[in-house]
Amino acid sequence: MTDRRTDPGTPDPVVVVAGALCHQGRLLAARRSAPEELAGRWELPGGKLEPGESPEEALVRELREELGIETEVGARVPGEWPLKPGYVLRVWAARLTSGEPRPLEDHDELRWLARHELDSVDWLDQDRPAVAEAGRLLPGAPEASAAPTDGARG
Image (cartoon, rainbow, N blue to C red; front, top):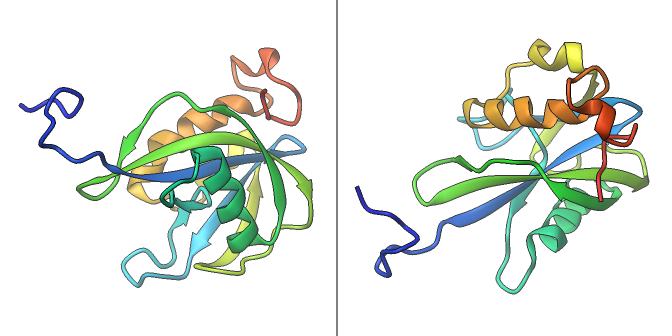
């Protein structure tokens, strides 16, 4: 098996950033409307890192474009999850600073989910482990007592 970190011939994966957007003890879920093979399933909102952007800058931009909101990015959620070949998902805690989320691009519905509701939507397979980690930011999670009540860290 080839290790990407030591094989100079293996290109770095395309980073897809997502926000564990927590507000009033709930996590925001976004239902995909496109592409067709993902439509109707749920994800943490975000998108691809563009050249020259930091992951945090990309996340702020993506949440602004997709949801029409301003956010503050906190700590990275532990873990990294493979998407399709050559793509990797990385998640950051995020705090809503202004606006009301609306499904502007690539989504047709949004839901704020409490920790006990996280399994109530059909998450994309690749988002499930990320959502499980992000759920630890919410009240009622074993580690939640160390996190601020709005779920953001940093």
